[in-house]
Length: 395
Image (cartoon, rainbow, N blue to C red; front, side, top):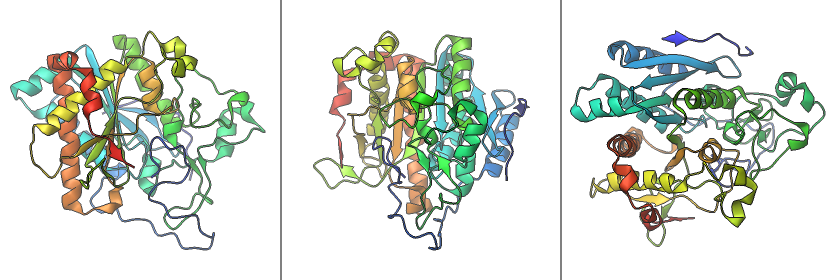
């Protein structure tokens, strides 16, 4: 396992599209003397276990999987990237940017292991055609606390960026307390609002505190690490063809039915830069490719439908009227990547092991739909208009 120089500072479920600052699984904020009761996460992967599993995968893959430390969290925990394949089409997949959204990490580890150890013809083709970069558990401090936000104070941000002295903290800075999480005594940021389409952006005081429809700032080390991996792949390959972000959401049903959603998909996170609504992103009009994003989502949907009547059916479209340039998905889509959001039903603590196992398999199946489609080239032949035929989520 390769390790880069350690540069971190060492110290001691909101929906993607809402812009609220309280997670959907939270109850209203309560008084500071209320006892915090963290939800159980039995059977999910800790950061220590992630380290062991990645080391094991790298070892048994006999050179097919390369694991590196890409960076460090605010509290000095490793953020890993695992690379498999030698193709010129690049797929970057991340999980657990919100630390209480854990199914994606299990699924991603299973995918990496399979890609690195299987000699099936279809897996060999994936390795030959694709370079797959996996970043499981990109917000490990939040993982250890089983919460959405990272573990970082505004004062630490100002230490890193003195030009922000005296400005208001960002809108995505959590300082509340409720029955599950105590941000009041242990603040943190929603890392998935800390991205900027300008990958070289340096924080400027005039851009604070911002809002959900404006770009982020790269003030958290977790977002900086993901950005740096993305830029490194751009420099090496010219572009990152596909970016996939694995999340959780609340419990919903398919629009017009009582059928519970297994997971929701999306390829639209900002208004099209070539449209009047997206004029503020016009500088990205030549790189933004929403048609490809839609084709990728159709590939996932088709892969899931091939399973027929199963407990992991009922795939829906996430809300489409989004303007979220501060998310990794929004920023990287503007930079030319086909973008895919997975929103698995429920928060991790909502289900038992059987249900979590089914959801993990659903994510694996969907990821295979993407990888197979890109490797074979079939995804480029899909009708992007079929994206709009995916049923909506009833919210």
